[in-house]
Length: 319
Image (cartoon, rainbow, N blue to C red; front, side, top):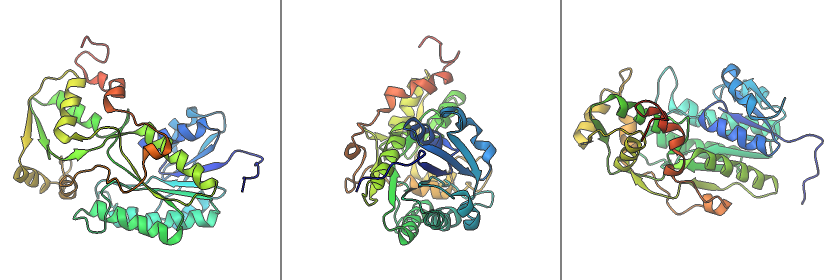
C-alpha cells in the first residue's frame, strides 16, 4: 500500500550517530531529505554533523544504549532507527555484553515504544554464537536480541569499513610512517573492505525498503575485492610513499603480543587475536551491495583522498 504523504520529512534516529559510520550515514539520509537525529552519550560530539544538512535538518539528543528509559525518551518521534553502537575492546567500564547484547535489546525496545517503522542493527561479518571471539559472539547475540523484539528488523554485517575517518587505514599509515619496519599480524587473513559511503547508501536503501513493506533481512556488505592483511598493509605503505620492510609476525608472536592486551596502548588484545584467526569475507549466503544496485568502491579508488597526508612533506608532495 502506498505511504500517505507526511506534512514533514521523516525522522531517522542514529544511535551512535556521531561516529565514523554515523557521519557518512547522516550525510546520506540528509541528502535525500530526511531529518536526522544523532543519539549519543554526549550530544556535543555530534556538532560536526550539522553542516551536513540544511538549517534545522540535523539534531542531537543524549542517549545511552545501556539506559533503556533514557533511550526511549531520545527516540521519541523517530520514524526509523539505526543502531550503530559497538566497541572493539572492553575498556573504561564498557563490556561487550552490555553494549552489543543488552544495548541492542534496549535499542529495539525503545524503537518499538517510539513506533518506528524501520529498524537496522549494525553487526559484523563473523558474528556467530559459536565464535571463539567474545566480540563476534556478542554481536550474534545482539542480532538475536533485536529480532526477539522486532522480528522484521534488518541486520547489516559489513566487512572491514574504510573511509577518511576510519581507524584501520589511518592507524596503519601512522605506524608505517613512524616505524623502521612494519610487523604484519595475521598476514594471510582475508578481508573484503567496504567503503563507508557504500555502507551508508546500503543502510538508507534498506530502511526505505522497510517503509514500503519489505521485512528486514540479514545483509552482508563487502567491497569488490578480497585482500589479505599483508596486501592491505602493503597498499597503505605504497599509498603513503613509505618504503618500509613488512615483517610477517608468526602466530606465536601474535599470541604473545595479545597476552599484553590488557596494558594501555597494547597493539592487540586477546580477543582481537581470535578475531584475526578467521577470514572476514562474504559468505555468499545473504544479499549484499549488488542486490541494492550499489557496485562497490575499490579501496584504491578513494584512499588517496586521506592517505596522502601521511606522505613525507604532506599530501601534495611529489609521489
